[in-house]
Image (cartoon, rainbow, N blue to C red; front, side):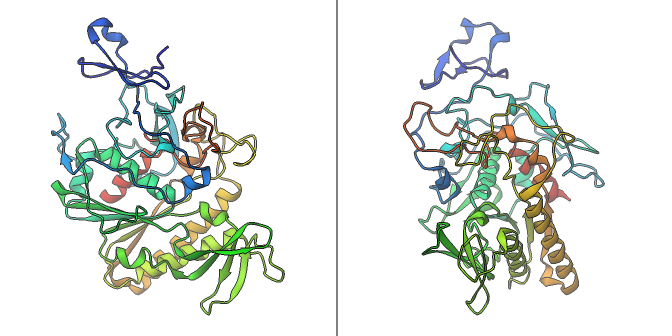
Amino acid sequence: MAVRCSWRLASRSALLVYEPMQKLQLVNPTAVSLPALVIVLFIVTTPYRRSFFDAYGPAGFVSIPSGSRLPPAANTAPAIARVPQECDIFRGDWVQDDDGVLPYYTNISCPVIQEHQNCMKYGRPELGFLRWRWRPAGCELPRFDAAGFLEVMRDRSMAFVGDSLARNHMQSLICLLSKVEYPKDISRTQNQEFRTLRYASHNFTVSVFWSPFLVKANLSDADHGSGRLWNLYLDEPDEAWLPSVSASDYVVISAANWFTRPSLFYDESGRVVACHYCLVPGVPDLTLRHSLRVAFRTALRGITSLPGFNGTAIVRTVSPTSHFEGGEWDEGGDCRRTRPYASNETSMAGLDLDLHTAQVEEFAAAQEAARRTGSGGARVMLMDTTAAMVLRPDGHPSRYGHWAHENVTLYNDCVHWCLPGPIDVWNEILLQMLLA
């Protein structure tokens, strides 16, 4: 039996029907009545075979069509809808979207969805998680305007810096913009961790830089019983990204998940001063709360004092680490909820709250330092998405990152976000921040 979702097609030319582990079928619309027209998202590619931790790490960037512009969308609004200046777009609730609006994109129209985030391809049985929209407490958040975003970013550039969730964020943006144009890959390196794409029609470039700790880091061979240790040089910004963003207009900085790894902390002289779960005798354990805080402090200080940087650094706060239920990630934990929480049902707590607090406080300190010193025109902004995303345990891939019958070792993914999915609100919010 075909698994179908509840959106209607605007076109009557064909009906896309998804059947698990089968190829796409085209159904003649004359064979079904108009009310029965539905769309289901599906694409056939090679199954994803990496481990869950590999999903956090570097991954090949999915190839995309050579830069090409699609026909202009009909009835394009002449002006971009804006939220009122006094509206706090970061606090609110998820409400059901009953207007029958189609998803922004599908896993057919967007070619950059990575396997472990391609929830529809791998047979997620319910798609109701796509029928919710974020409503700030004091206003309505406009839907994402792809043409408007490109116009705002005409002759500008944006960089995403961080771990695999920074890549998840960037790929959401590319998918959203695919309604208007596919970018051209103009990367100067073969390293798939660092990509630069250009939208020719607006001379807009978007880049992603892999830097899961934001600061200088390397994996050592030392193992004192907690696993191989990472060496974190918390006072040194990562040269893999910082010099490369000096000409960027916007730099979106995020990180959190990799700080959970056992690690040693080094000071400026190269001396070990503390650690997180290193089990090394005589080395104080200051935990990942310390390392994340100092890393953000160093990254923000580095970018606001970076010679030639006159752009805006945007701190995106932590994406929830708390959505595993029934066990930890490696103990059978999963995220099988099918609807969001209401804002009065849950809130930030535990590690999510601690990391969020550290990020917000370091942002405030950087903002004050930039105001006090001038920092050559550099600005800092806070993209405080944590409260909204804590409410969406239903939006993760869970076990739908591979075929159910495959004999693979994968943990349930309750960290990354399905595409399309709740993560698309990050770019709805981002657009409003660009307009502010």
